[in-house]
Image (cartoon, rainbow, N blue to C red):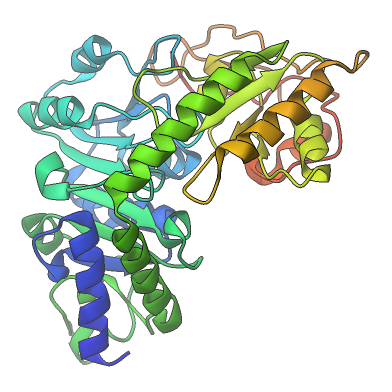
Length: 400
């Protein structure tokens, strides 16, 4: 990509996130790759044996697994912020987890499974008071609300293009300038070097130092176009309309007999996660799909938070700017029809026994899952036409 075009695309992302400079933006394949960049590059430098990494119970697997890998490699410990029955984190418990060994707090801006908006200002402020850095997974937030990384004071903020109406395979990592300067390369190759000999390599400064190889040119252009589209509508306008839809959808779904909403925090984005008595979530997803209604059914790549509520899967509807009140009514009508059909097996709930992980507190645990569970939840997002027979959920790490 010509340098001028690349700078323009980088500047579009920086403006979208409220970053001070386009040089604070690293292009990646998406949120998952951004977190997997931070873990080895920054994490191997600053996280050591006996240190602690704090996550919330609400996290996507893309935040949990890289943190686990880093903790295992460095001899660190994961600590988990519990949530209350509405699906919001318990701030007092969070503050008690912070110690002088806390090196990084990694949390979502918005829970992809429940829609909970986390209180980032309090989380980030407390982490910085304890001397810890903060990584925010913004994948589920950037298309729903204004984001200003300077106002948040996040050390890292990551996002995916596909979550903001852009292409797959492109995303961005924001990091504070002094943080980026401290990060060594995580991949080697072309583009990220100034000079290479067999004796020594001189690297480019960031962000290029962290972008080895040929950039994803077409996807970066598509991401820039998507962000400009969202900005023309206005994220404040999007947030206002989606909150109106969310309030309306919450009222009409609560009127469906046997429907239970999972995640009812007062501060949440337009995501409705639910189960329906007499049905596996995958069966609900398939039935709605047959009516032309698009939802997702499964664990949503967030198994620990679903186990916190005694579930292995939910149905998730996510009304957005392209939806209408009439379409919400179609969803409610279809669910009412399902609720009137008797004789279907209920959604399986999970007993949550107590276990211990790495010397920490109680953990949700259970027997190893069989192939039927794997079929039902593969990828956590594609509605399956199979019910969930077989054994209980796979063993889980701690989620209070």
